[in-house]
Amino acid sequence: MSDLTMRQLFRSLHARMLALSVVATLIALLVAGWAIAGVLERFVIEGLDRRLDSEVSLLASAVDADGSIDRTRLQQNLGALEGAGGWRWRIVAPGQTLQSSDFPRLDPGPPRPPAPLDSAGAGGPRPPAVDDERLQPLEGISEDGVRVHARELTIETRRGPVTLTAAAPRAVVSRPIREALMPLLLTLLVLGVVLGAAALLQLRVGLRPVRQLRDQVAAIRSGGRSRVDEGQPTELRPLAIELNQLAEENRAALAAARQSAANLAHSLKTPVSALAIQLIDFPELAAQVSRIDTTIRHHLARARSQAVNRRISTPLAPAIDDLVTAIRGIHADRELEIVTDIPGNPAVAVDPQDLDELIGNLLDNAARHATSRVSLFARPGIDGTRRVAIGIADDGPGIAEHERLRATQPGTRLDERGDGHGFGLSIVSEIAALYGATVEMREAEGGGLLVVLTLPRSEVEGDV
Image 1 (cartoon, rainbow, N blue to C red):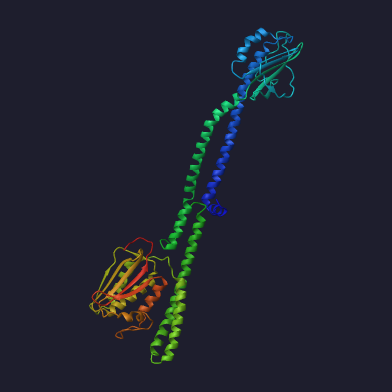
Image 2: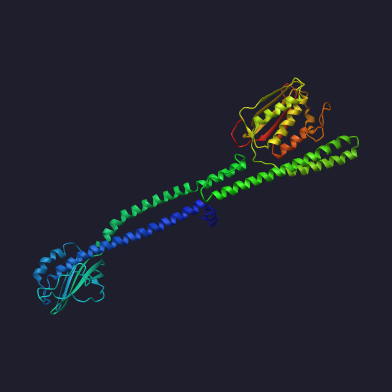
């Protein structure tokens, strides 16, 4: 694995905590295995020492107080001394040495004080006890290269010291340790797997609030919610509170910027538009006013685009119902039918005020030019559920295809009848551009104009 991949991997808290847990578990299992193996070896050696001490006692029972060896008694004990293969013995007395045929070479240990005679001074030495401190452990190797473990005792007789040694193959220690270590290692392996699974579960459960907080922040960005839940674990609650405060400050700043842009727009656009109409007979002055109007619109569009809340969510049906009610009231003196077809309750990522201005201008424009009927419908966009297409059609004279582009230019009126200054469709185009929306004019079925406004769909509930 490359250094770059490792750095990217350990940027994850999950990976860091998992790696730390794995390392800690491995170290704990190794220490536990080493400690258990050490304890097991000590117990096995202690058991072996007790057996060797018993054999030393048997050897001592064949030594008389004068240092001579009772061969008859020794012969009787040889069956017990050499009953198992590899077990060896040796008696070193003054003037003679008796031992197994292949007694191993032993490393001499530090000298120990000899065991005293019994209190009567005859009948042999006192038999050594298992825990007698005078018994000395030794290590060695046989002629065929087998390691051995031995116990040695020196007793004092009237003729001098007698050394008694009993030895056993080291395999007597290693064999039971190996046999015990196999299930022990399997147990430690299973324990390691269980601990690893527990660590993964702990990380998944422990980091779940972090993932939920991440999803809630993403929902705020997409407009699905306005705040994160503050009922977080103790460590995350301050972060949740700070995020909510930040979101609230952003909303306040955005609202202030939008209001400033709207105020400036209303303060400048109407006087400039009126001046342009009054100077229509003075081409040079009208051109200068047009340049002023273009500059104002350009900079207002830039300021407003920076203040657009792209995470807003506005249900479509209630907003359109209110607008239809208002348009019917404005044109109450006419027998005008306005029908809507909005399946479900789709929500669009458009500010409510901007949505009112978009749909309101199109509805008012359609109502002013309609003969008797205006229809509005909403459908999914051509890219599925990511957009909502809103169509507004009238049964009026419509707009010729070559005139449709000019109809969106500021101050352009293709129909001089009635009120209006020719800014309705241009305003719709400008606001739509801020949200990445599109405005398309077509010929309606049966004549008239069909305007299709395609808006970005919000992530909240509701389908079209």
